[in-house]
Length: 465
Image (cartoon, rainbow, N blue to C red):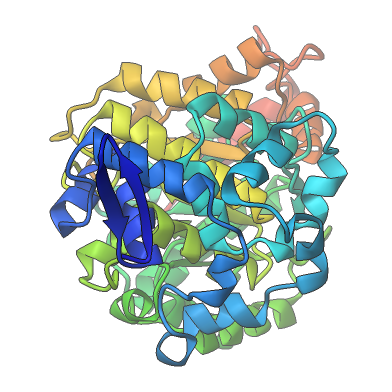
């Protein structure tokens, strides 16, 4: 065995790096389903022990998937910055963890190594961290992006207003948008998951959102979360596309199952940039990920779910996105069985994404057949707020009636902002104050009777077809 150690009088060994990483992972259903999880807590502890002593340079010497066989691996190795890696090049995984946690390391030094850290290094460090370690380091990683407002500033928490409707009824969508705006939601994006992906339907929804944003001069951006090929076609036809959305994964084969590759994503980004719709910046890609996606596509190459997820972040950061979020509990209990596994996965994903320089949000969510409930989501949401999460979802009543899963509500964002002293994106906050939705204490206005607000309510609810 390449990686082995004697424990209690017997030798424990792991044949390669991907096996060591899988066995060191905290327990989760996806790795059990794949048949790669540790057989016992004893085996897991030994794997973590060995992993802590592993030099970071080993990840450069032993690709989990050969670059000649996988474009994500090629991207990881071609984009690795050896100069940025130099401050940690002599570290083991355990020493890297200590370097990230010590006060002697400045936040600026952590930011400076982003392009020297491979996703596998980030995943390895996460595997030997407690939850509080993941929170403490992620909070030190500030990542700011801009399109029509500024996302990710310290002391800020943004939200995606998610007004999904099972039939894409514009009246229902407009009502949900109004509801969310009145609760201060929507500064990250007003984003619809369309019930149908036809170009005609997606274009209709794009015009609906663009009309609302432009008419009321809302400093935010819209997105209809269609497949990137649909969005690309509509951009060529002159549709009002702000953000380009796509689900992504950590292997070429998994991305192929989504109908995408890196070349297609690059084409979509360049096409969107040419539209020039951003007013403050040109971060215009929106990516969603989730542990278990590569396994569900039978495209994981024997790599554990958390490491596959971290590899997806290499894809994301290559395109300078405005938003990235892990839809952490959406894929189901086959991959993250219960609340404990969902909470752990959410903290891991957020840590890895922020460490790698991504504007990470999280869809704090679960499906109705998982062993989880809203109290578990309250716990994860609060922990992510402490960890400096860039944004969460805002779903009417926390119940997505189109996708049929449980997420976070407009009220949840108000709670998180209040108890942690967080505020919306600055440009959006100014708009909320000007509209009389928030008062000067950044709380919901008691009266909400300003002429501007009443006019907006009337316009949003009139003649929606």
